[in-house]
Image (cartoon, rainbow, N blue to C red; front, side, top):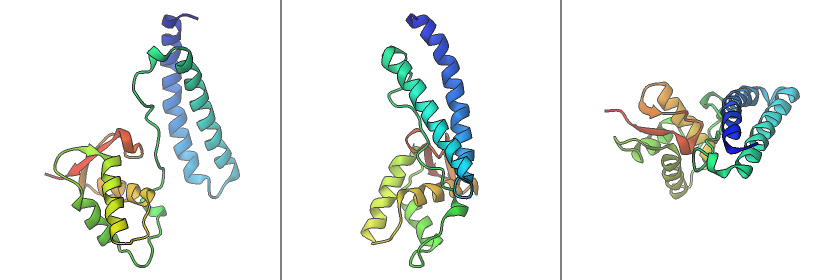
Length: 160
């Protein structure tokens, strides 16, 4: 196979990767209750990563980005159980305090909010912050661009 043929195959693989990513996200939502869903999620990850990795190892010039945009977390806000010492309003205040009116990477906002949580000695992790940011965007309290589950490949900002 030459690079032109590989590029054609890669187009199909990237389409499949997006579909597998969506399937994995759906399976992740059921994984706690269903062993088959958990296995489906693991298989989707394996197929996605191994197929693309093999292609990019052989043809590194075809890699269209520096890093493949993977899902950082599938945790949804309705799945979160906050510690009793932390309120939703307090978490919102922390997140909003590290945001600006300019779009910034979701990963950066999570890192800044995580640092603030650590300073306040709050038992909050990155996934909880990511889920809350998603909920803030869904409720139209902040603006967002991209799939917020992909922290390094999405952006958020304060509403104008």
